[in-house]
Image 1 (cartoon, one colour):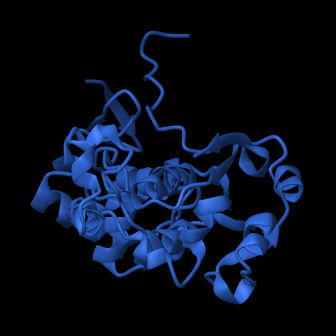
Image 2: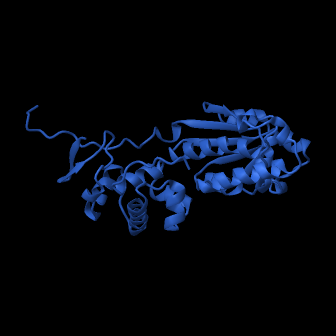
Image 3: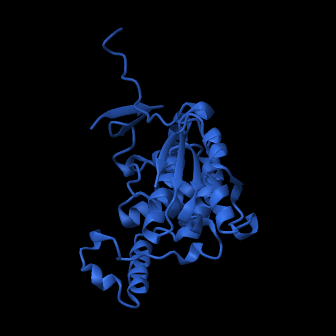
Length: 171
Length: 104
């Protein structure tokens, strides 16, 4: 090794471990507008990092992929002390609609897409969407009621099997 | 701030290797940077890079994947094809811009 040798080039390390690399499973169980976003944002971030990502929609979370409802998720102040407003206000007529429209506006101002468009972006990024069998049966929903990109209505055990070795988030 | 040399280009970079001075970038350097991350640039790549640089120049911030797609008109799926695995970071690197900081 001589002192005249040039230092190695500094280049970012982008490659992950390839197909056998990191895998993420996200379970979305909430149908409130505010609680739809954490799962979507994390799924999108993981995909952008080359992580294989599967999202399972269960219980109220099924609303996020139900075509009749996905554009109309709501935000309520009721039971949410983080708004730091008197809880009684939240029960007044029209408050949920007002809170929802405020939140929608705040999200749009940050250039964050609404729920259907966000899901489309996740699918375009290679993400996998799955609906929960039991929740679909409970609500009498068939694949025709769900957004087209949902790959299947599957049981909890099927989801666990598909996501073997994955890190898991329950939201 | 480290200085590194790539194929005869002396460039200022951050600890990870992203250029810190966008004015050191040119078309030829783009090909060199692309090769470092295993890419061969085509006109499709270059169109995206052009948008990234113009947007950075305008807003002082590297666009996120979503913004890059909306602004360049290249669908997200295509961006994943052009810059596989970590498109937002790869695009920024090849365009000689800092890593994007936005979440979405």
